[in-house]
Image (cartoon, rainbow, N blue to C red; front, side, top):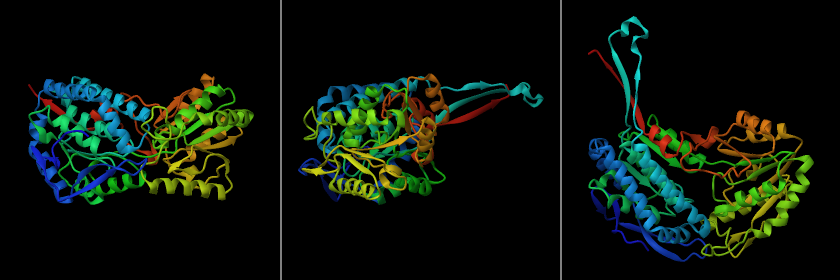
Length: 474
């Protein structure tokens, strides 16, 4: 286990907590460590400390912030294998997915370092009206203030990094709250950050339940909240935090459209790669597949023929692709949703059973509207296939969802590709690749109930700064 002080990193040091909680390995339920449990009072104390150093953080030279971000990237790289193993134990995700998470985390910190030198403004032509004659105008970007970052359990290291690194780049103190199930990797990350700066209170961490989160987001002294998680919780945070700025990276039921001119082998491969990575616990994993009728049967056959390649088992094995979900309650919920879909008329083509605590990779066909497997974010290893008459019907079905994060289209037609870019109501359209593709330097976020605002260091830094206009008469 990583070596860092006991307690929570609040203020310049680490504060003791009354309570602690077991952190368990989802695959077998064994205890892998204990984590301090924070309180609403400690959350308020963290905001006190962040406010106290906000001006000092904002005035840190660009070179200092850039050096810190690069130092953290190097520290993570040096401990890469240890982070990977900790993430496997903490999240229960297959090793291959944890390796990807750490690699992406390093890129995120490096990219944030590059953004420090790009924080600049522009001049404004004030003399377009006679009243502006003789005036000089320009704007610059200033830190928004204290940032509260709340991360999900599925990618705890990466999601916390997408809160912390851009905040540092923007010159903002940040208080991060990890998911209760997965606090350890984030605690270690925060320890590494604080060990590389003379101003440790610029990055703090508070664990705890919803009361802790509420204390953080409702504090009127903060400048922004950045949240990754479910739509229901995100909507509640937006209401509670108002009028504070909220950046919400929420859920989805990502769709993949298979057009009549698609490369069916590539599309089937995309379903296998994109539907079951991280055991399906990813907001842009393939959930809904809409195949045009002329190719639907052949495409379905290709998916089912290769489903056995999705290896089930211990997430510590490099061969495993699907393992236990984060907890038994999640497994029971996903299994219940599958049963309800079948009762509503869906056909079970493969999987559907829980074996040794692991839900088998599941493929359903003809899932109707109005059931959770189609309408909501399933967050498990389940893919739903539907046959449609043409691309028009497919696009209409994609847009009928209340979500809109990423969608994919498989087609050899540029016309279809550009139609998708123009017509699909999502934050990202991916052509001939899985909807789960995400480069951490691109703008990432959704529309509708999938959220508001964009992540990716460049875009998050913009979200966490405000323009300040300067008008001068020399």
